[in-house]
Length: 377
Picture: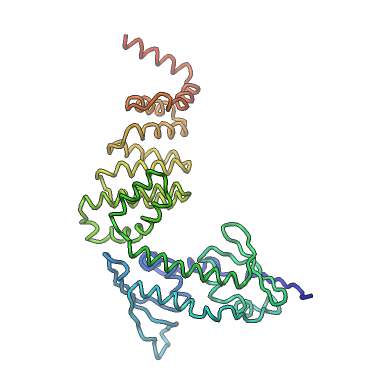
């Protein structure tokens, strides 16, 4: 019976390699935003060094990428020839390079005889797969070899999984293909303002996944467009429609368990909204997102801003009351409850808040109410 051998992978694990390289690149964040974080990582893995970008703000897909392939140093007597492609074609070239050996990818070099043979470990698993693994959240922990079968123990989303080496490679290749598909679909329909109406209907029926499908491609190109002269001179109507769409998308992210991403989208929406007609709704959504994650003190500012910009008092005053209660600011909470009543909020909707206020203020609240009644008389 074949003997089982286990190899620790600390020596070949590459967790955080992309981020560490980024610390030494001044334009790292801009390149990630324009090219796409995963595709920038792909370029490093395949040896495609980006030398220049000519950004097309209106159609990011047509951004021009200048690059050279292969390592290049000052000592090179015969530097690589520069190449130029549109961003869409550059992404396809990268994915093609990563998957070019797909037919031969299941031919696996022999497993090492000992754990100290780092190069043999790298060749057995595949150098590209070692680099791609952390891009998609896989942290390789152990290689187990038994006969002709190799199994990887990996951490993914905090859970340990056991994957056949060939299955792991196939899964990673699938992630790479999906990356290109998402980028292709997203750019083709990046900023289609007609989708806002459909997204609004989906939000009304609580179909948050549908909102994500319709608008998920918006934030990246809109963040870039906002910094352009064209973005700054955008007509108020277009600004409002974009802000409305970003508001719907941000709230959908929050509802689907991605509050941090949702807040980033909502803040971008607020930049587009400025002080326009949808600004109050964006601040209300941002306050609700903070409240959802238990950050009641932070939510107070956006909610008060929403009120000042004309948000629905019936929607915002009860939210503010809850935030003040969580911060144990009971007089402020009482004021919000009174404002909510004046705005037409039913008494039954404020029962819990009133009970907590009365429990805390007790006799002081009773005396104050008596004074109010006496003054009215």
